[in-house]
Figure (cartoon, rainbow, N blue to C red):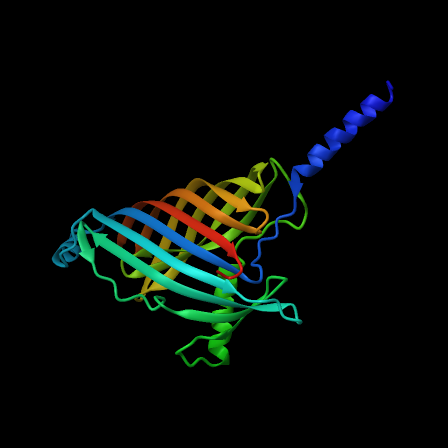
Length: 288
């Protein structure tokens, strides 16, 4: 009995540790419906420094400094999947709706043209291994080159989240790089954010992650015939809830702050921004 009890407790402890370990494989499943809602609010303050002549030129354009800019983006989308075929592929249709972007500059609304994504459907084929291929876009003629472009774009969106191929225990972390674009008046800056996910709990078929983001900018390029040098950094924190049965994140909330310094010719632009984003996905089976 004295020997049996330690072995028994060791077995219980080992089982408990194993039960708190899981391999995460985000993927879509056949015959399901995924309702997606995305919201992002950005507040940015930007000031400009330069020679007296340059500052007068800025003033002559009616630009008030410092500039206070806001951007509110909301997007709804539905992903519906069909029955699994014999080749291990199943149909997947992405439909965008309610894509709205509202912008203001110094309190004045800046109208945005109708978003081309509104009402757009993209018909794809999706494999059980996570590979996606665009077949067609109803109402639009697309050639093979456009199909390849759409396939790469949709694939990066659908397969954005990656986890290691090994089981993760509570306290384990994994990281990935996610592309990010920051609109500055007249320029669209592309960059990459490093995201760190830390598994903090497993309960009721839900995994809770702490999310930490970091960004370092150091780039030089040409814009309108002038050399543009950009430096800056940013950081953010948030949470992610992952549905283990459905193999997909159901909610992500991130608060992010960043600052930058951009030298364009003889002008220096200084900016600070706060970005709050929310991403939710609700899942139903049967394609309903």
